[in-house]
Structures are given as structure tokens and as C-alpha cells.
Image (cartoon, rainbow, N blue to C red):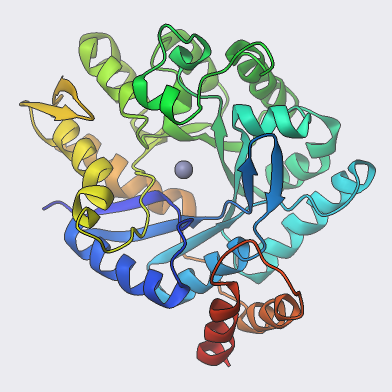
Length: 356
Ligand SMILES: [Zn+2]
């Protein structure tokens, strides 16, 4: 099996860190994933309210350390003060994250429910100092922007989207509005290294996708949202020239997770990697989440870039993890009486024990 470097990996299930590391080790082996980028999502959404998941950022560095030298880590911004001081906080955080070993910032901020809950648009002044710092230093952001177009209409949303509450009525920002915000960010910070996850959910509009890549450092990852790529495969003669033209700006990514080792384990963790490989490495018909699609059998040279070379070019050598910082943070977190994540106390003990 061809080896891949995966730009888009999370660790959000309730599994102790120690077990998470062991599970990832097995999963990377089965999928022949040789390098990986752990993306932190430091908040959880419950209905309309957002709460801090205070172990997420530090876990990214622990995972990076455990899988060194093959691993990278992206931090997420923490909303740790009143709105009027967030701009300075985000700048301070970004500086701190890059000095202690993170390789980029993950922004889930463009997710419709988060935009609705926080009421801070992506092009808000609150982010300007942060974007400016990222642009000046050439540090990458991986951003989740909107969701599939179909989700804004209950009659076109998928069964899965409806079941999981990812259908958006007029109380949410529209897809057009979210897209506008991202373009407004790019107009103000045109050299920003902004990678939109899930191909920016642009499979419905090749011109929008082209417009996004008209900036010099923008890119897409191909993390499913399988519907993005099934849509494209149906019009592949239209999309192939786009993939060829932008072959240096498309990254392999899967939304890979460490899944609980129950009877569905292998199906769960391998579902998206398998889908992408069937799509890009074969010209046969397969089924993904109940939908038939035909592989597009991408040229090997293009796959080499998308699977591996672009990743290396973007991230280079992993930044060195500052172990003292990880230990200090773990000690600070150990003083808190309550944490959102179930195994926080075990994880803190594990970090203090293994990194001391
Ligand atoms: Zn993701």
C-alpha cells in the first residue's frame, strides 16, 4: 500500500491519552500513514453554548512528542477572556504556541454552529493581529469553513446531516456569508497561508475554488466530506484540469481519529482513508456511506505530491517540542478542580510521569 502523510488528524473521543497513543500506532500501521499532523479542537459545542476543552492543546504536543520525528501539532485558539481583550490574547497565544513547538493553528471557527454561538465573524477585527502575525511569519492555518451547501436546505441535506443536527435554518449565518468572510480575510491578508479543510466545501462551484486559490499561499485539504469528492468525480473531466493546475496546493487529509477498540474499530478508523484511496488509486466503482462512486485513478505523480511532497514542503522539519512547557502546563491544569474531558486527571498524571 502506498504510504501517505495525513495533514488532518483529531483525538476528540473519550479515550485516555496513553491508550490513544497505542491505538494511533496500530491505525497508522494498517493505513500506512507515515507522517501526521494532530489538530487541536479546544472547545466543545453543546446546543447553543461552547465550552473550553482545556486538555486539547497540550495533548497535541504530547502526541507529537510520542510520535516524533514523524508528527506535527496544530494548536487551537482559546477564548480565555472578555471580547475586548481577545485580540491581544490571540496574538499572545500564537506567539506562545510557535515558541513551544506547535507547527500551525487549527481554526474550527468557520463551523456554522460556532459562528452562531460566538457571534464573531471570521473577518472580525478580533482576529486581525493574529492573522497579521501568521501572515508575517508564514505560519499555516487549517480552517474549517462552512459545510456542504446542501445542509442549508432541509430538503437537500443528507440523512446523516439531519440526524447529527448539521442542518442550518435562518438563525445561522448563510454559506454565502461565511464564504464572504473568508474572502474578506484574504483580501486583507493576501499572503496568509490558509488551508481550507474539506476542499472548502467548494465542490459545487469550481469558480469559487479557483478564486480562493488566486491568492498566493492558499490551499485545500481533501479530508472527506466524501460528498465533495463524489460530486467532483461525477464531473471529473471538469475537475481534473483543476487538480493538475493546483497539484502543489492540495493536501491529503482524512479526519483520522483514534477510535474505541470495539467491534466496529477497523471500519470506523479506516472508512475515510479507504474512501480516498479507492477514489484516487482505482477506476472501479465503490460505495461510501451508501453512495456509489467511481474512482478517478489519479496520476502517480500527482498522488506523490498530494500524498507526501506538499506536506513536507508546507511543514518542513517539525518544530522542537518544549517539554518544560508541557510539564508546566500539565501542572497548572492539575490545579483545576474540573475538566471537560473525562480522563483529564489520568492524562495529566500520565504526562507528568512520562515526560519528567
Ligand atoms: Zn477535522
